[in-house]
Length: 260
Length: 260
Image 1 (cartoon, rainbow over the protein chains, first blue to last red):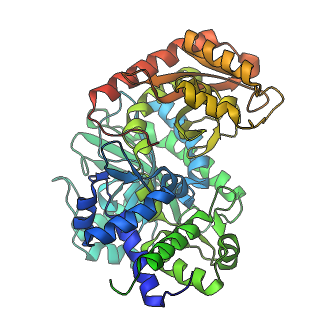
Image 2: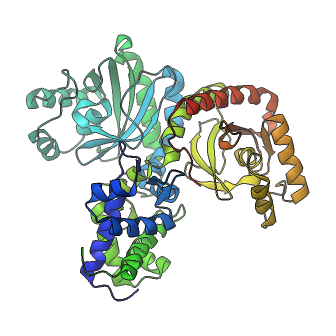
Image 3: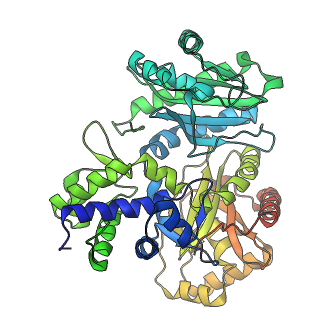
């Protein structure tokens, strides 16, 4: 309660958060010494913080003594806006799309320069792809990403293009001029496509979910095998779903659906 | 870095976690003064902690100045075991069940005395029910809960029954003897049912997902309208799905799928 100066308080919170930040999709389980190494915290400090995080269940420990993100943190995390209203409204529409296509169905939002995957439905017959719920992928290389990027301000798109752009495959569009023309097309047609730009063998179509000002709140996409690539069949059900979601979102209060 | 005694360190971490714990499903957005009130922290302390949590994006702030759980915390939370391997393996099987039934499909684990809903698929034609991904419900009142409870140790079941049991509807089984007989039935038949025990108008069937020792790792359930209640049609596809999930889980490493 008392006895902390402001600086020491800041640094303790930052260190506790650093322990949580040591976990990522390649490091879902860590030992004490791995946490210490990945955070740069001395073993004793890491141990003390871990014990506190564990008692709150921000971390849980398995039978082998390895730490992983705790169930309570998962529960609290699901209170974040994209996991709430947007996902709840979108999910039945995504189910409809899944029933029609039996392929990967994505719901994504923009965060910084990334497309963040809020939900992914996938079945046994869907083409295997890298996306996962809670994952991030570059906007210029994905269908949902291009749909989102095409509905940002000119300043944002300029800032986006000024950075070096990742090239996950040889088909990824990284030339500024070509990307800008592509985004122009997306706006005109009302949908985005990618052909092996993120994953070889995969073709995607995505439609933005727009708010009343015309800004993209989110995007809905379908990823199929390249051999079945045919946007003309996928765009109408995607549009229907996005219009349904837009209507339901507009009905609601001013609950935030996205963040930054 | 320096200057913190062990006690002050503990209390700062605990206070930062208390700020996160101020949010729940009824309080997804909070103002600074609400956070201060709900945590019992002085405004200045709450403000300082919030600023640190916000800079790491454990919290995000909307255009109106309200705080909500931040996108980074959501991303980190999804690294928790139930959201990882178990969910990824189960999801395509859940999609198959959804396609057959178009009803609510649940994947739940046990945590303490609760059934925790790891995933819920739902469509436009599914019966409206209270469950949500990341939510908790009492085990004795839900299908997935009874399926989980029936495969716990005798000591656990005894401790479960010794507490006062919630009664969400007048059909909820709260008498100890009746509940124990019901759990016996679940073990014999291999599936659990509920009829309006959690939600009026809803009927559920659930099958446990067992590990090699016969303990329940998770449970898979379907919730339909009471008027369509017919376990005999739902049990075979549920069993097929659970067996598929059990097989895939057994193939894997010793990655934890549940927690406590």
